Length: 303
Image (cartoon, rainbow, N blue to C red):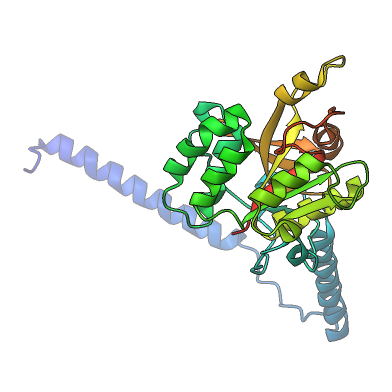
């Protein structure tokens, strides 16, 4: 709608518009008079050679920076680094591990124990590895080996393992007084009776370095390795007490400084090599249990 204005109001408004228009015109003229003249465009005095040198310098800096990043040690904890690729190995004896060249670091990846809440570290580890190797009835395997494991009844334990086709897939390695073959009559008889191929399934390490080497070989071949370690390092314990406080854990990775362990019920942790070796050596002086027949004991199932 239009605005109704009286004659005087209309005259006043017209005068205001005229003043505004005149002011704008004067401002425009003033701006044009004071505007700086255009400067002539100068041609670049930089030579093509200079430009080329600058570009080459930039490329050299970029190359050196990328080279630094490539060679810079990773600051990530080993648990956050990707596993080192490994080819497929067919392990049916300790001798099959000999050609394996373990890398500096390896991580098998995620695993999960079965029934870790039951408190049988050996049973949970065996059930998991059996499942990983394709076993479908690992739940029943766990239940079947639970009682003989608690009772340390090797005969019943191996009988149950044989039911699941593990009589020729269970491998023992350990160190005992630097011997290369088992000489204790009871242990020899037990392994001869219960292992399908004792010569292929039993390995005595002649020193701790050999034990570490085979541990890395097995893990880098993708095999979780069950080891017994000292849970309580207090001194003055009897041989029976020594066995009672040993515990089984599963080694699933390593690097230059640490070992990756899996504990019941469902815990992963990293342990320094020095601490791990002290615990893995065990304090036992009298080995009375065939599952822990010597220092640096390790058990694995072929996959």
